[in-house]
Image 1: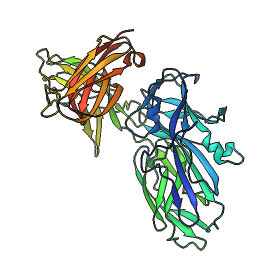
Image 2: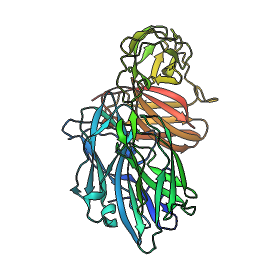
Image 3: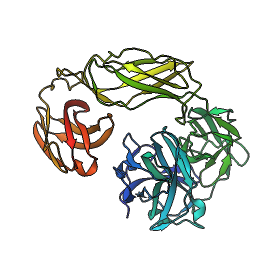
Image 4: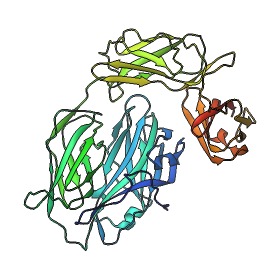
Length: 469
């Protein structure tokens, strides 16, 4: 059922923990098992990167998807002491909820309580250790995770994985414990704070031989990072917690010892970022309306904000260059862009002791004279071409790419709001013409899109395409 584990980041490494032979193993999703509802690009949840599995949830949880996990390795003489499943995700718009559901082979386990999400990406966790009287490695091989939205919102899932802690049954376990440095209180949701931890022997003396990685968690299930790394018996980390809570505390567990920090509060500090309403295609030198709102960490409008924000765009020609005063946390007004651009965005910022910023979606500014400021690949402008036939298309179309030089090619398709709708990596191409068949019509809804051909990571050609149903 499972495929070979993917090497995706430094976190996805099994870490042997000092002489006591405790272990922490991170198992990423690597297999698409089931999907109910319109979920796009489920494999994007395998790797922690900028790509997302996207779908619309339902209040009854009927629109969900399930992924298998990479098989564990180096399990000989290792006894499992803990299993936690994770999902790194966010949703469009205001708050919503999801559940994480374990499956043991094809048998559904107990689902988590509804876990809160907002428009800010966070990692939610669910400890499933108690769902087995004794965990066997065969259980882990057959473990899968269902992502189950409980709100009718659009969900973006970045990374799904599990963390397994274990101990070596053949090794004598060194007696040790952990001690936390005092945690300041209150801490601010979404803002990093320092955390120091010491490994001590049975006499309370620093255990300088303790090296490796251990699992950390908190009561909100949103702590990041979720692994602390020890060197010479000491660990120092910059911790972020993405939900508010009174009397929160941090738990550390290496499969041998389990200890907790002191209590602290996590509070919402108010203004965290700006949100810009979606912007569609615009015309050069034709004013258009935009709307900005001041948001807190949970993406709720900060109605008390009445300040003004600076504004600019990627062409450097946006006018005006600042908003008026916000009213009840919102400002709306007309702006103008004086240059055409293949991909423009509007940015804003406000300084209140720290810089609060926001960025719109990408959008196309059309110039009727055909002069645009898209940063075409140097030396290839006007020579690299992408053609699409048929266009409009219903299902499959043939994409023809011509480049006079070799390079790494990628086609990214954007919708009218500048949001990435699909992507195709062509890999390394030789000089000349490359053709591929792409069934975009089955994957995307009817509408107008733009195909952006990138060579070596830089835009080289841009083409409008239309999908009909």
